[in-house]
Length: 82
Image (cartoon, rainbow, N blue to C red):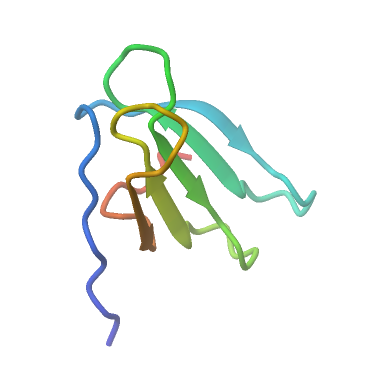
């Protein structure tokens, strides 16, 4: 049985992936940088750290100051579209 994931709060309810990148060249996306409130600035950052193509770490920067306000294991209830 899988543990329930912590849900993160974001600045808005829309998700626009600004970056979806394969950082290690294995053909699967490893990094997602997203805007959730439509201002064009990233506030949601997600990383696949084990190479399985799924989000392992989610960071949210609610005030967009460059410092994460919340870091959780998993996708934080906001899986990428890719």
